[in-house]
Length: 338
Ligand code: KG4
Ligand code: ZN
Image (cartoon, rainbow, N blue to C red):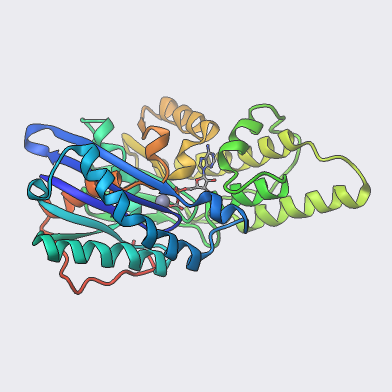
């Protein structure tokens, strides 16, 4: 099955073509075109939804042409059109959903709606032909921090969620405190390698008690207070130490939740997905957990950790196998249903 897929839930407009055939062992990304709006939003230190919607509308048609020509396929060869329908910013989601609906109607192709979080997990499938549910997964991105039980390609259950901010949001906030440009996750990763992870005591991101939930707002506030206190005292802030200490607090919290999830119900495979899964320190912590508990761990290549449409096309294939097609009355939803 050849699928043309779209992603526009936040600040990347993306179109991709994938070829999937589970019976023949084919999981192929034929093209993946991504137009990032980072430069526009960097001026404001974060994503401005109205500007994002407008930029998606400007980019999506050209990206479609690029994805089709890079893949070397024509309209006739496309079997279905897929699009992220939830969760995300409602204006940006509407642009992708309406474009995909229009194309599905004009080309007379079936339409498939994809949950963005499931898409992030699906980013791993083309790179690991043996990877199949059931497994446990964690999606850590600019908008999500979800620990998930994946019982089939389409059935997900939340084991733990963030109660406030997402992991990536916290990385970006700390980066902003350090004066780094938005989004600062990748630069924080580099700085953290140069600092002392035990230099600054910060609160845990694992919510205390009998829960697998996360909270990132406390650590964000603690970092802001720490920086303000140093400024008032006229003492210097060591960016490397702050990046390393913050990263350690995040990796410790995630590792703790993984151990607890495993103790509640052991699993033998674990997928780490989403933009923050590109973080080298988090990957190392998850790999160490995997080695200790004999859990096989999977990460997508960094370019497929952040938002792209190939992951949406791959998940769409499994939705199609499950008979989950959408009608032309499809509406996006900002809120996630997992
Ligand atoms: O998955 P994604 O592209 O967007 C959402 O679905 O939200 O994730 C973007 C997030 C940003 O917050 C960015 O700073 C973070 O992923 N990120 C990283 C790294 N690379 C990207 N965070 C930590 N370390 C990285 N290496
Ligand atoms: Zn995402």
